[in-house]
Amino acid sequence: MIELEAVSTRYGAVPMLREVTLRVGAGELVCLLGPNGAGKTTLFKTVAGLIRPTSGTVRVAGSPDARTERIAALGVGLVPENRRLFPGLTVAQNLCLGYEAVRRERVGFDQGLEDIGRLFPRVLERLDQMAGTLSGGEQAMVALARALIGRPTVLVMDEPSLGLAPKLIREYFRIVEELHARGSTVLLIEQNAGMALRIAQRGYVLSRGSVVADDAAEALRKSSVVRNLYFS
Amino acid sequence: MEQVVQQLINWLALGAITALLAVGFSLLFGVLNVIHFSHGDVALTAPFVAMGVLIALPAAGFGVAIIAAIVLVGFMGVILDWVSIRRFRSAPPMMALVATVALGIVLRELIRLLYPNGSNPHSFPRLFEGTAFTIAGATVSWLVVAMIGCSVLTMFALTLILYRSPLGMRIRAVSQDLEMARLAGIDPNGIFQATFFIASATGAVGGLFTASYVGLMRFDMGIIAGLLGFSAAVIGGLGNMTGAIVGSLVLAGLETLAQAILPDGAAYRLVVAFTLVLVVLVFRPAGLLGRVPVPKV
Image (cartoon, rainbow over all chains, first blue to last red; front, side, top):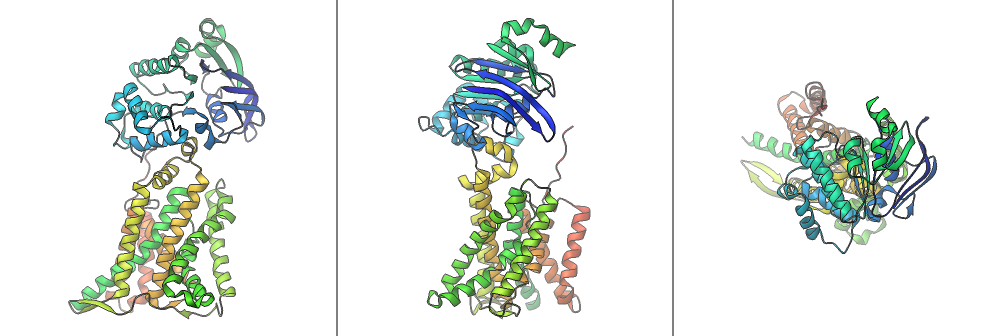
C-alpha cells in the first residue's frame, strides 16, 4: 500500500532522507521510529506528496508520485504532526473536509459520523465547537476522526502521541490497534518507541535520514539499535 | 441639525464605498497572505469597462454594462493572479508586494493609453437619479441609498459565502492552514481564483459607485481609492472582514468629520485619514479587531 524505493530528499542543499526504502503491505501495522531530527516528518511529507524526492520513487495506494491534493482521494487518511486542525472551523466542518477529501460514495457523511461516534463519543458532543478551542486530547481525537471519517484504507500518522497525557496515549494507541484489527493499513510514525512497538507488527528505525534497522516489532524491542538511539 | 444629518449620510456613503474595497484587501490578505496593492486599480477599471461595453454595444443598455463590468473585472482579477501574482506565492512577501504595485502601474497606464482620451477625466453617469427622501431637512439621493444598500447586501452575501457555503469553508481552510488544506484534498489554486474573483467583483461594485458618486472616472483614481481601502483594512485588522467594515466606517467618519469641522477641511481629509493609519499602526499594529498571535511557550 505504501512503498518508498531508495527515496532521497533535500531541503535546499541539506540532505534529509537518504536512500530510504520502506514498505507497508495491505493490512499491516508498521511503525517508523526515530529520535528528533531523524527525518520522520520529512518522510510523512514525502508520502503525502508535500516534498518531492530528489531521487527514488514513492508509491501510495498503487499510485506513483501522486499529487498532495489527490492522496486522500486514493483512500489514504493523514494525521499530521501537531494535529493541524483548522482552528477557525467547527469540529463538524473539520470532519466534513476530511470526509469530502476521500469522497467515497459508499459511505454517507451521517453514517461516517455515526462510526466516528462509536470510536470517539466526545467528538460528537463537540461538533459545533471551534476546533481551536478544544483541549489537546480532544484535538488529537478530532484529527484522527477527520482522517477516518471517509473510511480510508490506509492511515498514515505522524507523532500522534506528541503532547498527550500518558492515559490519553494509551487510549489513542488502543484505538489505532482496533482500527488495524478491523483491516486498516497503518503507518505509524512515532517517537514513543515503547508504545509503537507494542502494537506494531514491523518497524523501521530512522536515524539522520537513513533507515538503520528494519525488523519485526518484537525483534526491534530487543534491538541494541533502538536502545542506543533512545537511551544512549 | 440639517448639517449634522447631512454629514452622517455622507459618512455612511463614504464608508459604504470604502468597505467594498477594504473587504477585498482583507479577503486577499487572509487567503493569500499577500497585500494586493493593485486591488484599488483593478476595482477602478470597472467604470472604464462599463463605458467600454456601452461604446462597443450601445444597444446593451447601462444596466447590462454595469453587470458586465462587475463580472469582467472579477475575471480580470483571476487573470491578473494567473499571469502575475501566483508566480510570487513562494517568494518573499516583499517581492509579491512590489509585483502588485507594478501591476497597478501597468493597469493605469493601459487605461490611459487604450481608452479614448484616456489621460483626461471622463464624466460617469449617476447609477441612480433623484432624491429618495429628506430627513431633518437633509436630502438623501437614490444613489446614496443604493450605495449603502448595495454595500450592506454585498457584505451580507460575502458573509453567507464565507460562513455558510462549502466554498467559504474551503476558503477559510486555505487561509488557516494551506498545507493541511492540500492534505484535505483542496486545490489551493481553485480557491485562490475564487477569492480573486470575489474580491475583484466586490471591488468593481465599489469602483462603479465611486465614479458615480463623484460623477467622473479618471485613469489614476485607483491610487487614492486603493490606499483608502487598504488603510481601512489595516485599521480594522488585515484579514478580518468585520474589521474591514469597521475600519471603513472609522476612516470615513474621520474624513467626514475633518471636512465638516476643519477650515478648508476637504483639503485635509487625506492628511487626517492617513494620520489615523499611522496612529493605529503604532498603538494597535494588528488593527482594531485584529489579534496579534501569541507564541505558545
